[in-house]
Every structure is written in structure tokens, then in C-alpha cells.
Image (cartoon, rainbow, N blue to C red; front, side, top):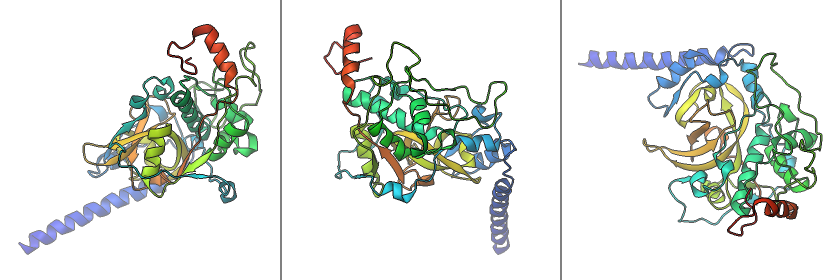
Length: 360
């Protein structure tokens, strides 16, 4: 009996050792020119019974190299001096917070909440997460269905926000909304939402130039600007702060560390299993819930089109600061500044029947 027990322990030890050797082998083979997708990582994740999520050879990155994938991850580490004057939002603890929340269900009238955007080949995630969340908040607070321009923020914020397609700082994007405002996507559409699937695509493209002119000559750049009231970080010492912020004011922008296995996410509640650090990424957090297996998660919208993840969305473990997801949460409230032009133009065409500020 003792010999059988020893044999079972030995087999278990060898299995665990083999698993860790397999993971180490994957981590050590990270070369910039190699393909980002490898069957070995799919096998490691799907072969781990405690993973909690499923991996696949995502069609979104079928032609991507490691370098090209890393370039998409455009969140830079914010210098500490940049955070000194940034207010921190704290909410009173509430017992009324629901067990599950989805902004798409809470505010079904907001079209932007149902969109999954595409950042293309540019490291503009920091800009996308910001304009997506602020667009939602204009609808939630003022009844305005508008899509704000990631291109304006990306091209015109300059060194204040970072380096454009080479990465930026989420909190400075929200400061830009307060100081400069941001035009709509209709005025200044994104310079390239195709990505590296078209002929002649290079691994790195330059940041678009700031034109400060609407593509439609009947629109005026200054009149199309939409502003933020403030820019703040959300206190991450208690996840209820993040939950209250989202349920009261709308989606927020979050930044987190991306590991190699995140590129393979298909479904379930993500947590890091294998692979090295790829970079920092920013997305929009829209809710939370609990899986059938009892794992708490955050619900987020990515900007890698609908061929990735759960139709463009993903879940990540909540309450444990998985990959730093709860450390860098930023947001701001929309401003009524400059909205008189929008109200007048909207009223003349199709004013809202219910008397809301506007509905486009």
C-alpha cells in the first residue's frame, strides 16, 4: 500500500514538474520576429483544470508577430509627478450594489455601449479606452448618442499624453478632455481601423497628424468640441469604489499588464496562466458578475474587433487585482460646455420627443 502511495506521489510530482517545464519553455522562446500564436500555449491553458477560461488560436492575431502584438499595448507607466495633483474619487460604502451589473443593460438607449471598436495596428488603446468611456457618459448623463474621436486625442494631445501610436497615459487623456475638449468621430474619423491585414502593412505606423479640421467642411472643429468637467482616479483600495463609480456614472477606463496568454483568450474568467509580460493595455470596464464556477469577474470591452474573445468582450478575475486591473482606474464627468451648438443643430433636425438634452 505504501509503495503504491509513493508511486502516486512520484507521478504527481513529475506531472507538476513537467507542466512547469512546459511553461518555462514557452516563456523562454519569446522572440520579437516570431508569431505571437503558438499551439503550446493553448495546450497549457486548456490543459489546466483550474484556469477558469478557454484559449484559442485567435483569428485576430493569426498573422501577428510578437513585436506587432506588443506594439498594440500602448499604456505607458505614468510618472509619479503626473499623479500628484490628480484627485482620487472615493464613494461611500453602499449595501445596494448589485451582485451583477452590465452597463449595456442599465442604459440600453446608449448606442456606444454596444460598440466594439478596432484600434488597428496603432498603440492607441489609451486613447480608445478614454473616448469610449466619455462617449458613454455623455449618453448616460445628457441623453446624447455621440461617438467621440480617438483620432483627435491621439493626434492632437501631443507630448502631454505621451507618444501617440507609441503609447500614452490614460489620465492625461482625461485631462485633455477638460482642457481642450474632443470632437466627434464624424468630424475626425480614426485614421486606420483595418490594422495589419491589408497589403503593405508595416509593423509600426506613424501617429496621424493633427489637422484640427472636420472632414465634413460644413462642420467646424471648435464647435464640435465636447469637454469633460474633471479628470480623476478611482480609489482602488476597495473594489466597491470602482463598482459604485461604474453603476452611478458609467464605464471607466482601466489599464492592466498583458501577458502572452491574453492574446489567446476565448471565453471564461481570465487570469494569467503562462507566458511573459507583453506590455500595458487600456480598455473600458462596463460591469461585473460571478461565473457559474463561483468566480467573481469584471466585464470589459476591448478594441480588438469582435473576432477576439467573447464577441470583443472579456472577463477578468475581480477582487484580487489580477494583472493590476484594479490599480489604475481613471474617469471624469462630461461637461455641458459648448453643447448649445449641438442642441440647436439637433433640435432643427430631429429633436427628442421626450425633451431630453439631445438624442442623435
